[in-house]
Image 1 (cartoon, rainbow, N blue to C red):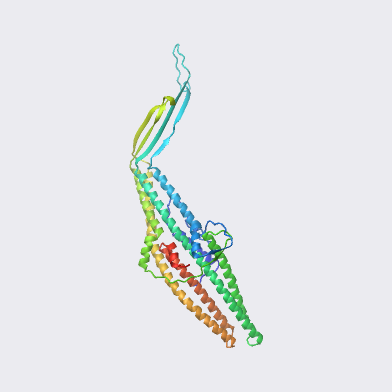
Image 2 (image 1 turned 60 degrees about the vertical axis):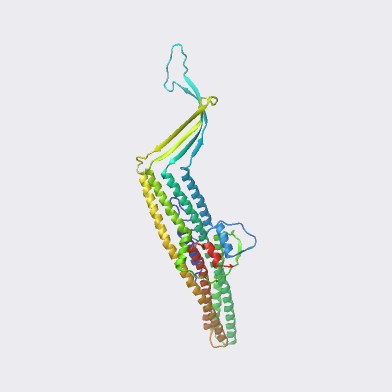
Length: 482
């Protein structure tokens, strides 16, 4: 397996982060989610909020950064997680709005009124002999009461509140799932960065080897023991390795910027990676055991399940639009023409509201609720199948990449031994630089395959932890001492 360089690899990151957003738990359909994915753009980080962050303050000097440190920073600063936390507060507010319809409402509005009216303006005009009747009348009144309104029974509001409570639980599960997605995104970028750093070290070693071959070939040409084409081949090989070193350094610098964006480092923050590409054997787990753990632990699955419950309560609330409701209203206080003469006043009222015809609005609500319930169930079934696929794929990738690491290690030893023999043969004049250059190519390919397979193995472990719904715990378990 060979990893691509340049924009192609950046697009791979966009694909991973796009996948993370696309597989995040279902959100309430009536409100667009902050983590709704869009189309990934080649050469960019895509539109997933998990590719961004809120930068922290600049730390003086060079910041040492381990994989766990990077994940901890990502869990504090990553934009996707911060937006998911805000979604919880929004869902909590929506729940209080629905609950408000079931709680008592108490208001107080005391007032004093002084009025003067023109009787003729109202069309009142009469006279009595010997009686002086004024054309205007002034009067005043005072009223101070406390009003209490309480819903005694409203099946629609009850189920709407239950639906909002389930939506709040879904948002909380979504937040937990977002933490796993942050671990996945940080793990991907960090492991890719240390793989790029290892490629620099390998490229530097290959430049030194190519330089030594070129010097040796030049000496032999000057001594007249080798044709000039041997020096030309060695020169081409040296410049090729130098180009690869330049590209490797550039890829590493860009990848560091990507890591900084994902975990929220301050712009311009200098840092270095303290973890190198680790290899730790993985204790196998059966597919059945892994699936059992995944369905019990995956927060996105639990969020999707609560979304179904929320949709069921929403449908009940819609159907309840056909049912009567009972409410209570009372007020108590004092009233009179003047506060000094106020006396006790009160009013108590019970109301039974019976819907007779509402223009088809209830029928429309039911149709929409049915559609949402069907969509929620379909999403849950799809996610169930996706979890099965994620777990199986992660286990297959882990097994395959572990075998690739072992083979790649052996290939490095064989390729380096072959290169040593080729150089000895060239020094003895038995062969030309073609054989040596080919051996150098084999060594470079073997190192690249080892770096790629080691990266794939470590990322497969993080992917498995994500598939099992325990990414945070999995990093500590699978990368002990790192």
